[in-house]
Each structure stands twice: as C-alpha cells, then as structure tokens.
Length: 367
Image (cartoon, rainbow, N blue to C red; front, top):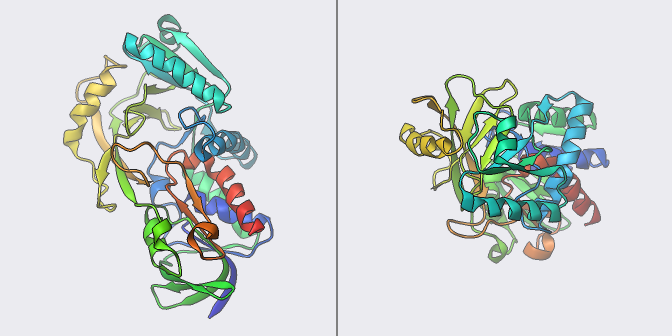
C-alpha cells in the first residue's frame, strides 16, 4: 500500500486551491480527480463572477471568505496574468416596493465588510446603462468576472511547481479509518494510505463521506442538488455592467452576466433535481427567462434567448429552507482523525477559493 502525506479528493477550483495552499506550506500533496480533466464539474458550469460578498449572512463563512477571497483573487489574477475584469454590477429594483430592499442589501453588505457600494437613482442608473429599466439600483464596483479555467490551470501549475501531483481518471471508491492514517480505496483496486485527506468532491462529497468506515453518519448533512440553467443571447447586449434583479427565494434571480468577450448570458434559475448528470437545458424554460429579463431590459429582442448550458449546485439545504453556510467538517464532528470534509461549497465558492484554500490548510496544519 502506497503511503502519501496529504490527499485532496476533487480537482475543482476549491480542491486545487486547497492543494496549492497545502503544497506551499510544505506538505506532500496528491490530488485525486475522477474525471479526465480538472474542473469539469461545478467549477466549469457557473457564471464566472467574482462576487463582492453582499448577500451572505453576516459572520458566516460565506461572507468572510467571499470578502477575503475577492481581494485575494483580484491580486492573484493580476500577478499571474489571468484574464479578468472588474466590470461592476448593478442590483436593480424594478418596482417601487423593491427600493427598500436595496437599502437593506446595502446595510447587510456593509456589515459584511463590502466597500465600493453606492445607491443610484433611476436617472443615475440609466446614465450608466441606457437600456436598463429600473426604479433604483445598487452599484457594486468590486464585482467582476474571471477566466475560471485559466485560474484553475494556474493553481495546478503552482501546486505542481511545489512538487504536488494531480492524478486524473482516479475515482475514489471508499475510505477507511485506520490507526494514525486514512486508507483510500480506488475504484481500480489501488490502495493508498494518507495522513491527511481533504474531501473536496463537490457534488459527490456527502456520498463519499458516507463511504468512509469509522465515520459517524449522523453528523453528515443531506445532499440536495439545484440545477441552474443558462440561456445565451443571440447578438450583443447593450450593457457593460452585470445586471442582477433583487434576490428571489432560493437564488439571485435570472441575472445578466458577461463573459470576457462581452457576450451576455442569463441565469441561473433554480431547478431542484435528483440526477446530477442531466445537464440539458429545456428550451421551454426560456419563456420564464424572457419574462424575468424584460423586467429590467424591456427591449430584449424577441426570440433572442437561446438554450445555453447548465450547472448543478451542491447544496446542503433543500427547497424552501434558508441557504446553508459552507460546512467545513473536521474530526471533532465525525470522528475520523485527519479527514476534513467540505460540504455545500456552492456560490461564492469560485470567488472564495483562495481564501478557502488557506482556511482549510490552516485547519489541517493545526490538526
């Protein structure tokens, strides 16, 4: 049985960030990825937005790590030459009764430590975005977009420069609590023995933890899966900022984001699913998208929305329940020394990745 120091399961953006932080701290790190490439799951099917930290519960890990990660990510991208843009975001009230909600959002954001926020009147918002219809807007200047794949390639390069390794096509079948170590059984029959294991398996993190002998199953959350569908725009959008409606239950509403080439996409919506492999986009959902988008862009051309792509959020709170915080679970909870589980790492996981990496590595190094 091969012996390794530290194993990270999952080569999404968060798994790679954790592995990088561990490697830079001097740990020998092996990343095990079930797919044939890095970042092919949730990390490659999102809006690629650099969030400011506006919406999350004050004091939560999501709030703290998003605000910290936002600053770290802009600095990292600048230093490493990763394509990104600080384009800013407008959160828009499309009716008069939503204006007070903008003020509440601003207050929460300030409590979270988010700076560079400004309430705009209808005239001020229209001056920035003439095609926009709203009663008022909240401008977040620290929101942006990033080349998520370029970011992951950079994290992998740093990890490998620090003598870490990424093993693709390496699905984990089970884990076993052993004396002074964790034994990992691969689907191909290979067995490894590790001092430290980080379960960053994203959509499969809860299921993988349930396959760990010696772990108290009562401590594990229930996994829920929320599919987010995106529609793309045929033609060029007349916007330079990201446009978000006031949040709705279960998500941030059908918002307009831009890629680094200036192309617009709309979404995600919230579709609770059991099948995490169904990433098809039902064209019939476009009617609801059209209705929601016209609330802030009335001049949306007829038939301009086309089915784009979908992603699945790894949630640990279900329909109708308040949004759960990131869950970073160590042996004090589950009883397996050396194992750290990462559950519910959905948005703002991309923005928070570097901060999450350092946070998890610090927990591991103290254990």
